Length: 103
Image (cartoon, rainbow, N blue to C red; front, top):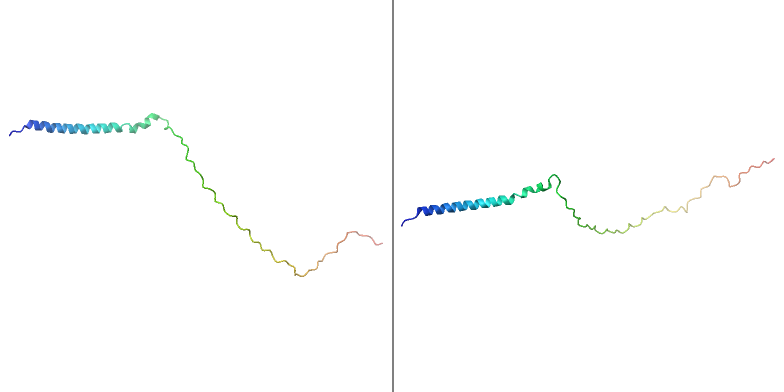
């Protein structure tokens, strides 16, 4: 049996070229897909990127805690001085200050 060496060589060459072409196409496609991601800043030139104003989520404060008022303080007054001795008062008697000459 004779084998065709030329046909086998052409087949392996075509397989190699096809695999290389497929790998190149994958690399070129991946590179083209990632090319636009790094250039987003170019659209704004020297101005900052636009800011989007969003209303914040409403915050509801918890209800206030109601405390009972503190108890009234207990006041202790001193004992009444009912049984103490009556001290004398050294003062002149009440009267009107009129001086009348006796002569």
